[in-house]
Image (cartoon, rainbow, N blue to C red; front, side, top):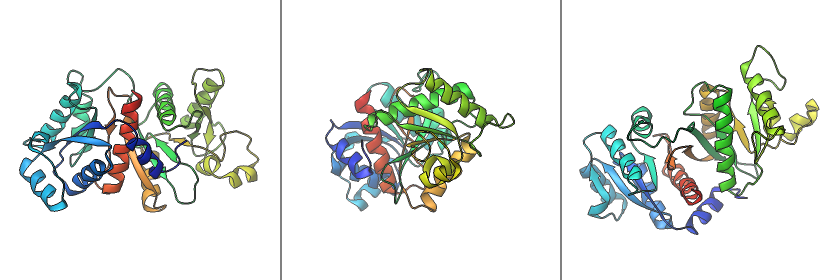
Amino acid sequence: MLRSFGEILKKAESLPSVKVAVAAADDQDVLEAVRDAMQHGIAEFLLFGDEAKIREISRQIGLDINDGQIFHADSPAQASKMAVSAVRDQQADVVMKGMVQTADFLRAVLNKEKGLRTGAVLSHVATFEVPGYDHLIHVTDPALNVAPDLKEKTQIAQNVIRYCHTLGNTEPKVAVLGAVEVVNPNMDATLHAAALAQMNRRGQIKGALVDGPFALDNAVSVRAVEHKGIESPVAGRADVLLVPDIEAGNMLYKSMVYFANSKIGAVVLGAAAPVVLTSRADSPESKLYSIALAVLQAAAQ
């Protein structure tokens, strides 16, 4: 089981290089991640965006890119459409968000006729290397599904379970989060959690241990679990935190970054090809980790 981003990079380096189409690549942090990924030998790139800016930034940061890898776009939205088209037309294996609004980028990815939809629910997973923890923590879905219902959460769970398998975790522990660790008929998150746990016990959700509801402390702290007398193979040892809605997920995501100083990589699951969806504020290091995660997903498809 891969337990750090260092191990993820080494695994990606051992795989055949993939081609990544970057939408709105005219940004220094994005191009530094491109440069670093090329130095690690994990990917090649097609860059869509303002050609003059791409060339100038590449010159400044020492990125050696050739003419056949740069494609001019008049706007970030157009760059997104062009990058998605490159993947759909099998000219690239992964599409990556650059300096473009998430809504514009996802509009291209989700286009019914020209995008990368498969009919499955798309979901976002953020992987964190948290100081003091001996394994990776995966949070889903902090960025894509606003208020998923039980059916959507079932597919979100299945997406992240397959994702964990690609990282060598053959039976991830999935904690379905709420505000409390008991079922409350007035709190939909606890009802969804109980249903997902029962679906796992009955074999409807396979390849993982799924339990809940859990408050956050009971999902990640053995001490909290022992104090409250909770009995579950998932409690206190979760690999995956399945959040109730986008607000909870977004706050957890950003608290992990800004309070816990965690390393992070993130991808979108369920599309016809891996999608790298990072925040524009993410560091070049985080963008590199996201590319490495996408390389592993592409190898598994």
